[in-house]
Amino acid sequence: MKSTVIVFPGSNCDRDVAVALKKFKFENQMIWHDDSNLPKTDLVVLPGGFSYGDYLRCGCIASKSKIMSDIIRHAKKGGLILGICNGFQILIEAGLIPGILLRNKKLKFSSKNVFLKILNSNNKFTSSYKKNSVITLPIAHNEGNYFANDKILKNLEDKSLIPFKYCDENGNIEKEYNPNVSSNNIAGILNAEKNILGMMPHPERSIDPLLSGEDGSLLFKGLLKI
Amino acid sequence: MKITVTVTLKKDVLDPQGKVVNKTLKNMGYNNITNVRQGKYFEIDINETEKDKAKEIIDEVSKKLLSNLIVEDYKINLE
Image 1 (cartoon, each protein chain N blue to C red):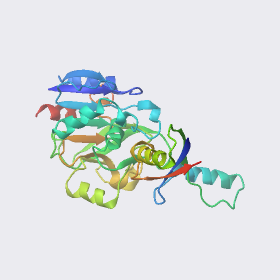
Image 2 (cartoon, rainbow over the protein chains, first blue to last red; image 1 turned 120 degrees about the horizontal axis):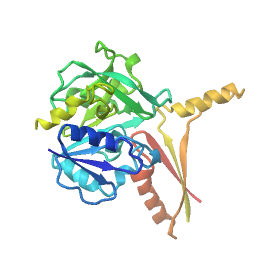
Image 3 (cartoon, chains in turn yellow, green; image 1 turned 135 degrees about the vertical axis):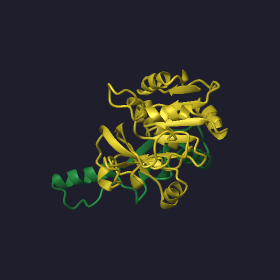
Image 4 (cartoon, rainbow over the protein chains, first blue to last red; image 1 turned 60 degrees about the vertical axis):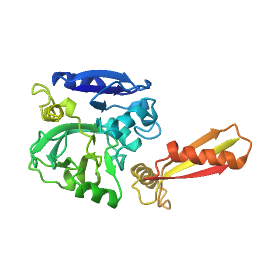
């Protein structure tokens, strides 16, 4: 399986995710944002970081990069795209998934491990997780407060486009376990066709039991099953 | 021609930074200040002599780049 990590000025999780992809035997390459041609690839990864120093709005300047027109074409053809943290913000600013990510309500950069409940394994990204299981992944962001109008939220819920929500260790989804006050405790969402996933937590930082656990591994392993 | 654009969060969108500024002003003793909303301000120079044409272009860039209409409003001011 071929993967491509896009590198923007200010990306800082690009090499972490490349290490994860290589560990699971993806044939990975790194592509600079200013290139205009996306090579043949099955999966595009928009990594975490602070592209363009979060100028204007997080992910906004990166979403207008040269490589993005090819990425949008890749998306329309049904190609897989995974946006992690800043990558999620870029997907939103590019209009590939609905809603917006606002500043965390408490104005604090939130960096810690969080519990997530797997709500849907009906897509290529979370197919290896057991539905209703609870996993731990790290988050590290300032703008992770997912916000959308009621119509969009209802559509996400009704069509099972929310693969995971913030919860406690027993899987209780309550406001108090929500690190950024996102709508409906949303930690990540899929587009309607389920070939694009945007998520605030970092699966690439949880692929090794010697470091911070390996709950992120199943996401990469799941993609390989296709 | 110089054109300025002000981008602010929509009325119903939570503005935590504005809230903190408001609270700090209260702590400083400005008790008659009741609300603060924080926004962004752009000064744009444009090579265009026709006012309407310039406004049209700035309107377009405000929609496409300067603001995100899901949560923000923008206002164009011609000098």
